[in-house]
Image 1 (cartoon, helix red, strand yellow):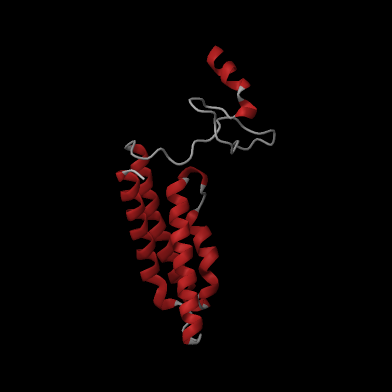
Image 2: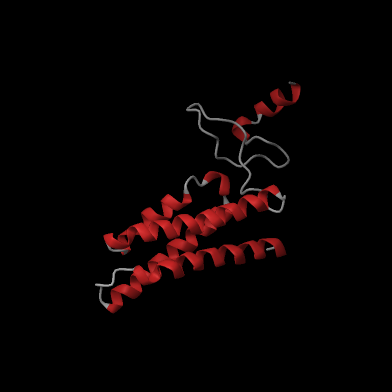
Length: 149
């Protein structure tokens, strides 16, 4: 892992921990101690996984705040969910802004390279392109058409 990638991971870790710290005390206060610890671990893991996915593939992670909130909301009483949703939205908003700045500065390639073609259903192809090309093996014939145009 190069130095910049290590710094990015460290920053994303900090965002993950900030979100976790802001909501950990809101976890179901009526649960017994063992259950609360289990819930805290689960919330922390979800926060970390969301940040890893955002760092790895920012362009293909639509609405990370909604995804994280949907994954963790069951650990909080209904009375705390608005505050949890706000904390998640603000924390992921800051993380997303940071990632966008990294992409714009050219320090991050925006995630895994994806084929530039679309499928028959009109969705973006998810395959990895051939080395030095814009298209995957299934769509390599489009490379020649794009070069001729």
